[in-house]
Amino acid sequence: MPKISVEVPAELLNDLDDHVGEDGKFVNRSEAIRASIRKTLDVLDDIDERQGRLDDEQ
Image 1 (tube, rainbow, N blue to C red):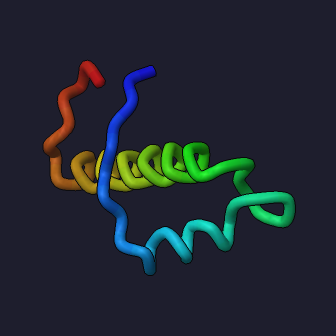
Image 2 (spheres, one colour):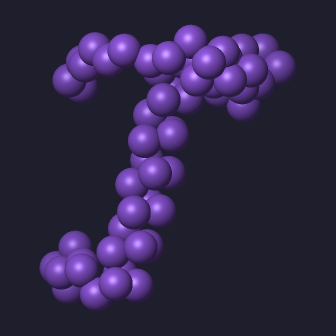
């Protein structure tokens, strides 16, 4: 799996951390970030589909 490095504003990281850990939805930050990216891509695909911008092969 490729690794990337990004700068994240502290406010976003603090909000993310509220969902990570023993009482959170995610085990660790990496899992939370991957899930967030996946959800964002799904939403963008839905928007593209409604706008007729998706190829039938996807």
